[in-house]
Image 1 (tube, rainbow, N blue to C red):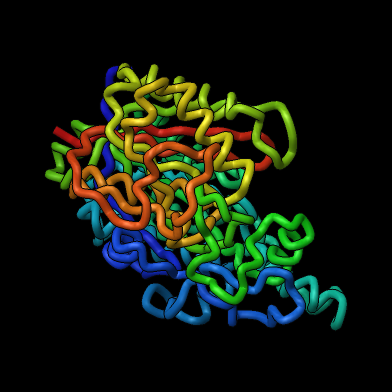
Image 2 (image 1 turned 90 degrees about the vertical axis):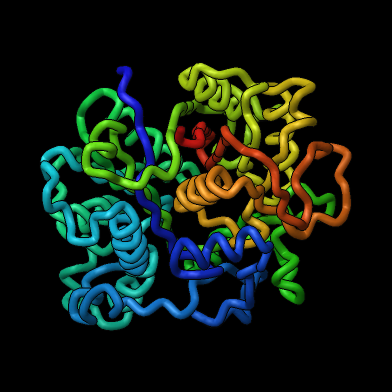
Length: 414
């Protein structure tokens, strides 16, 4: 269990850009990708804004015929996966690697909701005989992992995780353990989501969970701000190549960062609301720090879940105080959801990529739209402007409907 796990490749699709460099440029400069949704008619919805992916051309990755067999969330996963493998020096595929030692673990909160919408309409309007024979493999969440394995010939461990907004954090964490315990040398991991859809919007609007700041989209997602009133759905994918350190060194890979800790817990409290006081999230972070073998005082930055909802941001702040004590006031925190919205099952992966860039560049991305202090949220949230500072260790945390909590600890590779 003394194996070290590093990250050697990253790929991103987001509402601020369709590769890692564009994603990071948008996040670090606080350039919001939230706009009025134009991919379906939103005129009758309470919420009419979202972080939908723009200018995405699937023919850069496959033929139209192939694409028609894949839901959009799988298309995003493949696009981000191709970039991640190229970033890892594996653009030619897995040539030279033992394919049976390369696994895939990509999560999603909802999966193929676009396929469900489309085929349900076909069923009701045209009958069962017209439903696509590809509907089931388009819909099911595990086909992100399945399609990536088929594309690259990865024959190692292959599963998917669906824990709502913690899906990709759990996916990265479980990939970490697969490598640590020797089940794989390389894991292709992360998450993909296409929550900007009519059915998804209808469900979240019925819950009154989303921001209704329709007249000012770029200011709608405002984590930790006193005037926050709901989250904004985003969509996209984040894929990482994780690798056992000696394996990465042997093939001369460029090492981006090291994963040193992972924790996961359950609130066992409520299907949608976080536990009062943030107890479950606090315990997940404590577990991650314990596995990392570090103290809270060693942490230089926290990438918070920061959804821009009244309860999440309040209880997440309390969780951070529980874990870090008085030192919580000295640790820079930020949420990038002001910029890209809430990417549901892809959130943790995109935020982990943001943490990697922070470790590499010693720049903390801002929490944008932070204008009015909330007495319940009184920590340092890196408001509105990126901050240059030395960052050697970063924590990324996520929590989810169902009471799922997850946390990762990343370290600058030395």
